[in-house]
Structure formats: C-alpha cells, structure tokens
Length: 635
Image (spheres, rainbow, N blue to C red):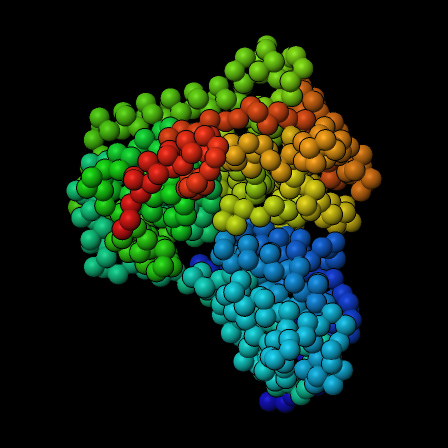
C-alpha cells in the first residue's frame, strides 16, 4: 500500500468525504458538506483544500454569515435526519472560532452530531503571538479553542499532521455513536493545515460506520414486564430519542394495544399525531391538563428516549403517586437511570417492540376500560382548551384581537399559522415564551412537523435552523416562528437562505422586547425591569420610556426577503398564502400583545425568588416558591 502526499487540509476533505453510515441496511454518506467562514487561519488550509478537492469529492461548501449560525444550521440538519447525516464547519482563528462555542454547546446538549474545525495559533510558535491569538502569561499551550473542551463530546488539537490518522476515526466514532454524539472539535493550527504529509492510501479508503441498536438485557426486560403488568395507571413520557430511533410506529402499536397514554416532551412532540387516541399532550412545566393530571396519578412512569430535564418533570414536582415507580428506556445509561428508574439500556424501537412481544405472549390485557375512558375524557377536555386558546377568549372583542386596538395574542397567531400550513409543515422555534405555547397549542401530525430546540433554548437558533431543515427536506414546508428579541440577535442567515435559493417562511412576533422574561420576572415578584425594548427615560435614567420602533418589515425586505406586515388573523392567512406562492424567503411581521398569555396547567418550574427583599411582591413569591419545593422528589 502506497502513500499520497497532501496537506492536512486536503487530507481532511478527502477523509470526511469518504465516511458512510448505515442503519437497518440503509447506507449513505455521513458528512454532506462543509460550512465555513475563511480568514488567515484557514483560507490557505481547509479553504484551499475545499476549493481544489471539494468538487471531486462531492463535498459541497456553504458560506454562512455568522459562525454561530452555521453550527445551528448543522445541528438542525442532523436533527431532521435523525442524526444519520451531518455537516462540518470551519472557521478562522480567534473570534471566528469562539463564535462557534454557543452552537457547539447546543449541539452537545441536544445530542446532535456536528463536526467543528476551528483554526488555532501556529504550532511552531515562531510567529508568536499571531493576530487574534489569546496569550496566556504562564501556560503557553492554552488557546481560545480550549474553550471548546467543556461543550464538546470530543476535542483534540492537531499539532502534527499525522495525529489525524488516529484522531479523525475517533472523531467519527463519537459522532456516529447514539450515546456519545454531540459537538466534535478538532482544533487546527494554521500552519499545520497547510503542511504536507505522506498519508497512507488506506487512510482514505471508504469506511462504513454502523449505527448500533442495542437490545435490552433479558433480566431488565423481564423486570419491566412485571412493572407494566402490575401497574393500574401507567404513563409513557416520550422524548427525542423515540424519534431519532424511528420508533414511532412501535410506540403507536404499544400504546394502542395496551392502553397506555403517551405524554410529550419538547423533543418528543410529534412521535404520535396530536389526534392519536393515546396522545395526552405535553407534560411538565409547559404541559397541558391531561398529561399533567395523569402524571400526578401515574403509578408507573416509563420514560422513553428522554433526558428528563426540569421542564419535563416540572422540576421534579409532577409525579405524586405515593408508590410511583419509574422505568427508563434509553440508549444512554446516564438517562436511563434518572429518577431512580429501572434502567432498560437499549435502542427505543428495539426495546418497545420487545416489550410489546413479551406482554402479548403473557396475555396482558392492558389498562382497564375505566382507565381508558378517563384518558379519553381528559384528552377531550384538553383538546377543547386548546381550541379555545387558539381562538382567543372572544373573536369579536379586543381580547380576541380580531377587532379593537389591541394586538393579537400569541396563542391566536399559533392557531392561524397551524391551521393554514397544516400539521405536516415543520415549525421551528427555540426561545422565549413561544416554545411553551407551541408545545401546548401546535398540532403536529408527523415526527418531523415539530422542531423546537429546548435543550439549550438558544436565542438565535431559529432562522439558522430553518435553513438546516430546508436543506434536509426541500419538499417540506418550513415555518420559523421567532420573537423579535431572538430575531434581533441573529437574523443574518436570511441572506444565506436567499443565496442558496431556499424556500422558507419566517413568522416574526413583535412584542417589543423580551416579553417572556418580563412574565418570568413578575412571577418572582420583580417589577418590569430591563426586558422591554424601550428608550431611556431621562427623568429616571431607567429603560422605561416609549418602545423603540423597529421596522422589521423594512429590515427583512432590505435583506432580500418578501416582507409582509400582518396585524390581523385575516392578514396572517393572506400572508401565509403569499409565502406559499413565493419561491424564496418570506418574513411575516405580526405585532403581538405580550400581556395575553397562555395559562399554565398545573406545571411548575423552579426559579427561586429572592430570599430577602423590601418588596412584598418578592416576599410573596418566595413563600410560594418554598411551598412548591416541598413537592420535589429528592431521590
């Protein structure tokens, strides 16, 4: 076997283009392209390599506007492909590299594969310090790229070309492992990127990474069968792992056959269609009345493919049955053990199918007819509440927003958008009050109709993620719903979507600032402070003057989008129809009233109020907080 002389950058391009994945007999390339912004750190390294070899290796290059945005695009793309396809991202040294850190954290929190190549200082250290290098007075091997370590599932600094021979395969092992996947970072000194090496030809042979489906241990499965058989009021909490494992059909069969209700987390929404007889809706802090009531009464909670974050468990106050037991079906042992659960460490689809088979063989009849009637009644009540919220209190009054001077409520906007685009369009969101309201009110009809990033809840994710989904499935309608605060943080990828010829609808809800946090502040007794987008009042020196007027329609139009102001329900419907006809990016600006809030449904989220304050509102909030904490499960 011979050798081929290439630069480090060229070797990376050739290697990543020749890595395939396979699951259930379906084999295809894993890395579908590379996003990058070039500077002195990588233009002569990975930039030169992509220009020279990208076409031959069928590795497409994409140019974003923001380094953080490109990582969000890559994460959304991987999520829509159930982690079976991914993108790589490259940046220059310094600020370009550190801009990716937030995106890396989001990918790792959400267990989504992204491959990152930030540039680094010269390995030779002759030209020291270089432009954009951080100097450490006592640790000469520290660089800005070390900040990737805590937010990456795998990190390596490549100080010699041949280190890639062991590091790149390890990077792909992590990327394609359903337990370990997340952000993988290979930091590349700029001189090493351009340095040549005689690479063994076998290094570039096509490789297949098989995505494993671990089966449950027989003893664990037997224990789970006993728990289910003994339970009178079992409840399933489904998460994103159910969708990534393509276990939705198995979940449908199990829930239907054995009469077990299914509650949804943010990542698990869409695993069952909203009108499935066993779908009892969202659970937890942003949950609905049906799921939260069944959660309080459940004597067995089966958590499938969820990491059981604080929102899903109402900060561990939800499950109140005195003898409740837990089982965790998860490919990740860390998650399977949470809440002291019986751990069933296995692929979700394999485990659900095995459980169905075992219960069927044992002749298990499932839950009682009485319990199934109760599930149906709770579902009917919850669905009625959703209808009322989406319509508004009275469509003919100011409260409903269809007439009068008040802006629309957020719930009404969600309702008209969902009704217009249907339950198969993908809705995208990440931060503010929208994710909670969408979880309650959006009616998804398939597993890819709901894409809300709520593991990291990263403001700025929304527009970039819209590109990722549009690239992943061009034939699907994609609707980004974003608040004005998040839009102002990162909207520049609209230009990228236009440059790539992507069709994308962005519904921008303008409530004059961080309306969600204003509501949260009031919950903990803090008067309105620092969240609205207001002028500074010269008499008080506080940000309490009039709202700052931002013409979002003109802003979006200036970037090349079709931009429409839609202040009413009819105007939103008309704008969505125009967006459907438009072959490009459409931004629909909807003035909204942040005071019209969707109520909670017995969910609680732990946000501590100040323990000492001169304000009675804060003291009252602290008393309520301490009382709620008494319901938390400590085990």
